[in-house]
Image (tube, rainbow, N blue to C red; front, top):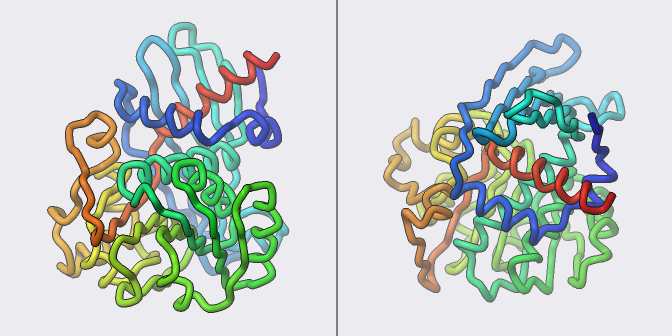
Length: 316
């Protein structure tokens, strides 16, 4: 059995290859039950510890399961908020083929899923991006979006301005201009694409500030009590999700406005399965504001793990 480290995953994984792999996976026969989500009291924190278990399998080929813990206040221990492991199993023999570092695998596949959605939804001529959030995902999302659109200018905003500067340094290898900004509201109206990956429980993006033609990539707010976009964002946008099953119940960005009758389920036009399988065709007008909500799907983990193991063997 091979353990594939975060360093190896970062070296092997190329955005274009993973985006294409995910597009094929969403169109394939991979089976994925609803992920198991448990909130466990944490007496040393103001927030619960969340345990996520995400299985997925391709009959006759591979079985995968991801085990992840989310501890929002783990910075107190100088540890990342998300930790875990991914196990890839041969479906024919039952042999464990590999174990992979789950946080890096998750970051890569999540960013690739957002870029895949952008491939369907955003203006093909999008040249500017605002990254809201300064966590692990931020630099991955910037690189993935730059892989599918001709991005030239990137702005980074975070509550901690110094962390925003760190993201600027982390993305210095990209052929784009990246700069940290201190005023979020001012930055919102300047860009073609807004990507948001935070743990905010109150909306950060005001729909009144959006301009026609923008694309919103909403990646954070992974719990029903979290929100990154206000009601006006939803009302002004054409909405697509990665998968209906998770998106309708797991994220406050949709669950709260649905519960309050701000929007109806019918407002959500498609998910990535329908778009990748060509069951629905999304055609945008120049004035459309598009809104992609990502909650994550175990299919993405399995596809990413398969690609990484394949590339590792090719390079051996």
